[in-house]
Length: 484
Image 1 (cartoon, rainbow, N blue to C red):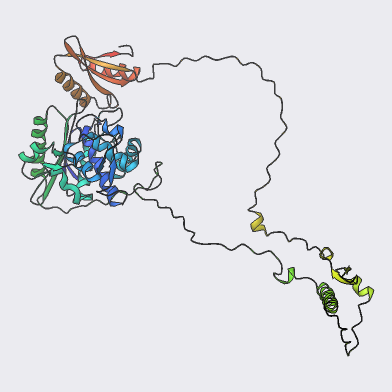
Image 2 (cartoon, one colour; image 1 turned 90 degrees about the vertical axis):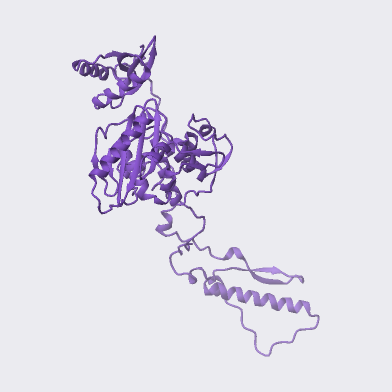
């Protein structure tokens, strides 16, 4: 795939949408999300990251991280981008998402937002795993987005060597960077299943070209081919073109990550608003005030009690009042009062009228308003009475799963004289039969003195149809089952 990075226009494409193993090109997405997390404030370059046992156990290429140790986030980025360290890539994913599985979900979500429609990630480093696939087209898109979305970090891909905290790392792409004029990145990748992969970028004058190669036979062949593609791009691209800078990805769906990716959800425990309780219905103060008759009776009884107390405390005779004393209320008036005045003997044995609290009329409580009643928990419905049901003895049904639909079958293309020849045959066949072997895994099995080229992970029907297509083209093919 060859692309004009300024406009996103495809200048050359050959099998660019074939899903293949991306190998360490995967780390471009790992680094893209790392830059995104820094921009969104989820993490900083100087955040200390504790290394898990899983990250420390990743196979080479590696930085040499030890489980339980801590290292700054910036050093993990350098190791993943420059040395292509698998342990650093896993540590980046765990630091951002908590686990590699959660980080893989974020990778896939970001890929969809970037328009990488034929890419599926399973891990952060790119080691071969079933279903972990991408295309030359999608990886070229990702290389362009790294340059335009995070230009402040893009220069890391052109550094020949750099301090990674516990070691100095050297660039796996330095041979290409030194050999091609204008080259400034970006990422290599290699596994046995993938071959030699490379996404490269170069700038000359006002023109920037991106090129991608999957499945190279060797690092030298890959570099030579990528330089040919870049030359083709510079020859075909116009000298001047308007730059169509892409916008940052917009995340609109939710794959269980809790809303927009990278958006920090800060929850505050502060109370921002306190609601007053709703008042009871009816008049507020007058509703609870006692009736006037009760107040008059209480005041009269209290006055009489005070007069008696003063008289008993002073041995001298109290002076008679000049005015006639106020007559006591008639029995009818007292009976009309809502409180009874009961005589209470004093210290001299005299009876002093006192209002009893029990005589006050009870004010029935006012029901709460409907808005508050609605908040009450409804009563739990009574459980129905148990019903005894006599269950007849049911016959036991024994089933046996069929293996015809499982992916335990495959096809063999025969033995080859060398491991390299077998890999080359598998890659050539996969490219010529994209629809047939799209989901199959390529594997080389050493048998006797030869190397057998196999496609695995197919159903029985898929294996049979694949051999029928290859045999029709005079290509040796033999299906095999789970026992082979």
